[in-house]
Amino acid sequence: MKTYLNIICALITLSFYSCTVGYKNDGDAVYYYHWNEGSGQHKNKLEANPATFKISKFDDYAKDDKSVFYQGEQIVGADATTFEAIDEFYARDKNFGWYGKDTIQTSKGKTFKVINSYYSTDGYDYFYTTSPLKMASPKDFKFVYCKSVDESWTTDGKFYYYKSYKAPSDDYKHMKTYPKSGGISNDSHWAYFLDHKLNYDIDGKWVVDTIDIKTFKITGYIECRDKYGCFNVYHGREKCDE
Image 1 (cartoon, rainbow, N blue to C red):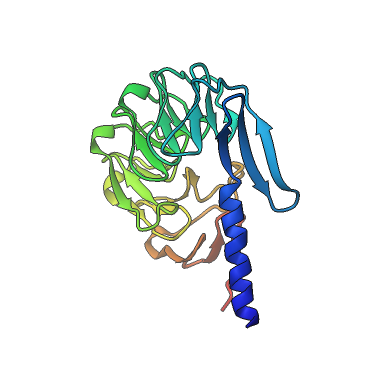
Image 2 (cartoon, rainbow, N blue to C red):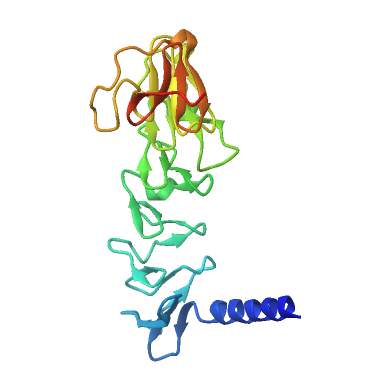
């Protein structure tokens, strides 16, 4: 009986939450309702024109004749006339693609389109959320690994990219990328983590002299080793747990 009552309470709470989040236009003013678990329901009045205010089918987005909003916040720099939401997280106007309320810098709005929740393109480059990948050959873009979009590798046929990071190898033919590694790769000479050689930490400090590529292997998420022992991608050599 107690479990049943808990379920009913949860459903009532969910129903209440869903009814009190989002935009409301009463004809005189436009409001955005949102919920905070600590402080409860909030209601913010928007600087919007009720007569021209419209909510997109992707309802985090809305606009009037002059301004655009995402989750109740005005999107600075968006062109209201040409702005259109094209996905739950993405939109475009005549100038740019948008991710939430953030500009996708260098993107071209007229040709901008969504690939998935994390990737988009304008036909000239590809983007990971708001970050341009600055691909050498965008026409050759493809996913190498994308079973999980937040742990993905892509390529343009010249370089490999982990999320928004470019592996800095000029030895493309011998590159190996490792799914579920957190961004580790190697070629015939060097091992890499994200956008730098594994010999350095993320701050650019040299942490290890030699990594033996012939015996290099991944042992887990951000974990690897070679014949000399185990390696921490942030700190360098460490004692193996064996």
